[in-house]
Image (tube, rainbow, N blue to C red; front, side, top):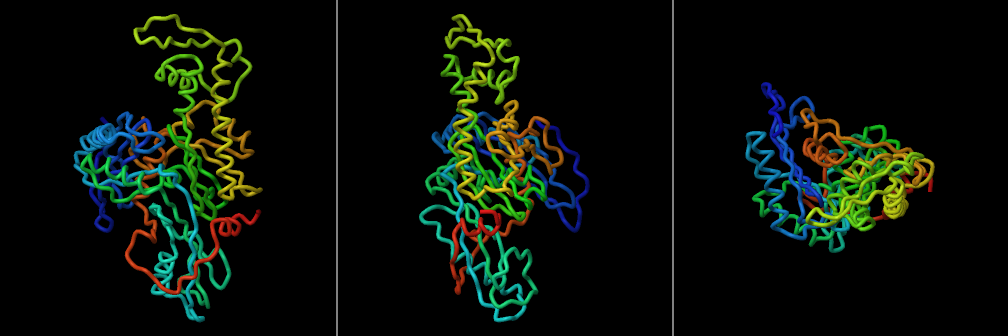
Length: 425
């Protein structure tokens, strides 16, 4: 049970309020309850975690198993916080999540841009979004344009003839979202907001300068790898690769005829992404797969284990490289990568990724929260921490609000906005 955090008197100007967040992953379900809305950083007052076997590639495959894990993690967090929560902000990475761009433009006729104009533009932007049979997870303003001038940060009060906006739209397959919502609902919880996991993780591990200069976050989960590309301080592309750290464990189990639990331990304690000169002489013990504990364990050089891991990493990062290119993350300005997620705990993976992708790579660990339990300070909990930060921020989502607009002039696709942002294609 997480330690209780002493609660000082609440600020009268900005009273704190509790928020619950939930990260439902392929291998585990994690929950946090935090106080947000005060003058300082969000403060964690309860946490919980349970193993989960009801998902595959982030997608619900067994409602009952998923419900038990969700209910157990939330119960732990609620007991630690001394609160009962009815709604959660939940992370989501399944359903072939992907990005698109919608654009809209309105006529200002040379007048100064007013708050009413901004509302009209947002309504026009919403009308320009075409989910094409999928469900919109996010629709966030990515870029304002004014009389053809791009990169306008705050157009309010300026004079213009035409005001435009490009919108970063993240969508996912509707059945995957419906199944996810049902699993959470069976645990007697409502979803107040659904958040793309890589965008949540970005809030917890990226700094403002990285997001402005240009960076790609790669979150290596157990069953799925999520990618979020940032430029000019905003997210401009999201993609997923249906591989994760559990595939490495499965490869080890298959290669050495051992159990999955043993393979996971081998990966954690002896595995690496980059071989060293000592790997040929150092020996690792491979437990037998016999259920009765019988059978002789095998012994082999650690270099053989590393070779199995490298084979899977080569497959995974080939797909990651393709996804980054599809999102426009190429050229001289696309040289920063941040790895996070449970797979980022693999020894020397940053060195491997830097060589394979030709980028500067670092490991991203969650920050920006007070009282985060030590056990949840690693990269595997970046999404969980980011969900709290998302709940505490004003994201200005366009889709999940009432209203529609006229005078929408849809233009440009994803590649057009990426070209404007990166300027190097």
